[in-house]
Length: 130
Image: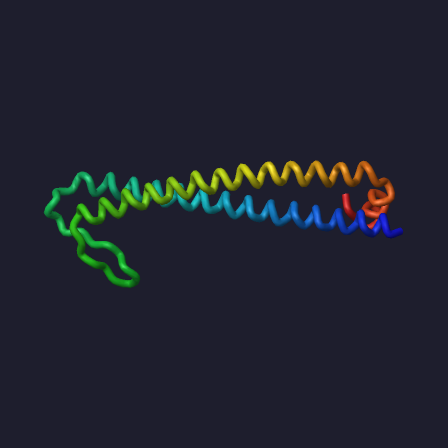
């Protein structure tokens, strides 16, 4: 009976780890998508502004107001945004890759636990797990 409860505890821990890792991976995917959108927005803004003369007044949104800034400053800000977003994307992709490996290992551990313990498999089926 103790072995069975230990196996059930181990199964629950692995299941919780799997769910937590899946949630982290989804969050990283959302972060990647947001940063890609930031890159596209900055690139489009930079493209549109590059056709303007240098002496045109440019305004940058700041909260609920707008502040006049030189075009060069705004272009530099856009370039920095692209660089920062690119590095965040690379970091998030590496973290997501690590999480995918962790998911694969956790899934393999769950399968191994279930194959090695038929009593646990039966108990889980009786409790509605599939």
